[in-house]
Length: 240
Image (cartoon, rainbow, N blue to C red; front, side, top):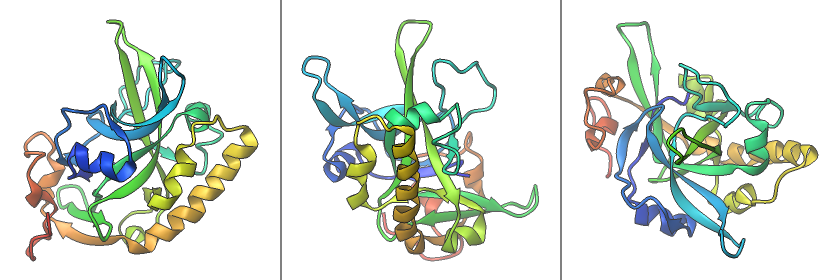
């Protein structure tokens, strides 16, 4: 968890909600984003000329890969809230690379191999703000790649009925504090974890679940822009 999620909003919608500048002009809404895909994130970045911090909507690879990390065949797309402030892979990004990963909802699966059932978990509206971490590294061709990971926690309420983990969702009034670009000391990082627990507890009861067509599990064969991927299995279409 979380291994597949939905962002159905256009870039202009996301920048309006987060009061951010748009650095992801070619973003297209997707109803099935998988690890290693390019996903939208929101983070604070300093201008190169003035040093002033500006909130931006940016593309990031959903496969957290700091510069010091060796190549891995397994993508790093989730970070655990319980250790994000202390684990050597994540703690630097949590201290100074916090971001928001916007999403409408996410998918989980239950059942035995070959008989998997797909579940779509979502909020009451079209936007959830998941806490994430981000980092950047220079590639062999000289370009920079931003990558991200979604922070997860012990699941609550409807999410806990499907899986034991869920994204750390924040209410919109908690985003400013989380995105504050000031680097966190170890003590401040611990306090931020407590803040995330308390704030995500506010969102967890609002999450709902319904079963969807298991074809969503075949990321290579579906059309990620197909909104029917989140429609209830055998039920009424969802609003889109």
